[in-house]
Image: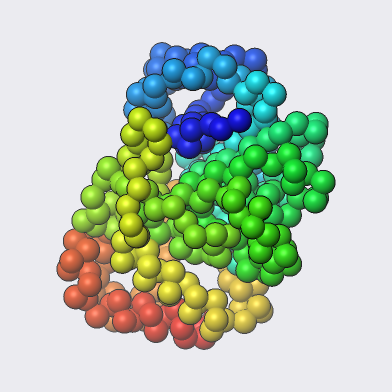
Length: 348
């Protein structure tokens, strides 16, 4: 049974909201979100809520929330399990930043663990959820950001007996997959039947999806938010910038030049650093996240470390970089310094 692509995007969006109750229809979930006046601190939550309130719920009376696996307080994994007639839809929530009384840094600790080039705890947890709930039914996998990564991981690594029941994988602005995992399952990646089930969507300005290996050529979708500063690129990672039309998602021909440059820089970063370097790198990153500092304080620490390693970078603060127009950033010689930093073998 075909389901419109925008449905998977909208379910991925809804996975970021507290669920009203098990067994409700998605139409009821949307109405619950519209009536919720809770004041959440995160700007992304408010923007997501505006988009959710505008969802056309013409098909959502027949999709039901079957269960929610909520391990957010421990591993950071959250999966919404939906039923659509005889089909199951597994929808994995993406990463969330620290916000007091809402969420901690578990997601980002797991994200950086991907640099160790092996399955992470969240990825393996997602696979156990699939095995627990699939029950020989036809199923879809979807999610945004790290949620899309977990959906891809399940599809790529699940047992062969599950493949015939896999209807499709819908991933939005996912960070891709670790090369070591792709190499292990290269036989599945080369299978045309498997490739035809992959729908990997990327916002034209999204940079996160340039970090790891693509399972297939991405479908580039249009953004409602033009990019003039780095802050604009940050917002374009989220689903509230996606342009929808009646049938689906608006396409564009190719991604913006900054994500393309970032993908090249990440290839250099991985190429010129050893496995041992990444192990030390992840340990240091974990120390930062386990300190439970807010994002702004973490950025200040990172800025200080960059300035210590590269004194010339101190002539441009992090706040200035974020607010500087992209046109001006291309003229700054700090771009070359950044490239040298990524290629150089420096101690963590």
